Image (cartoon, rainbow, N blue to C red):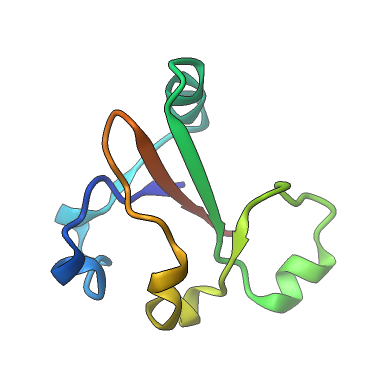
Length: 90
């Protein structure tokens, strides 16, 4: 899983650089949620992988990885300590 911690809007289009994107574990995400911090999940699996999977997070935003840049306006901003954006794929 990846989290986009408070990336300024002007950098969002280039948010694939390692210094701007952090890997997180499921345990870290659970700690955020246990502290009451909001977590927005973005499912970046391709349509075929998504349709073949029995595992789907209710409420996750579905945006295939190749289309993320075109849909940045659909992803709320991350606010460390308040709201985290977590992307995941297979």
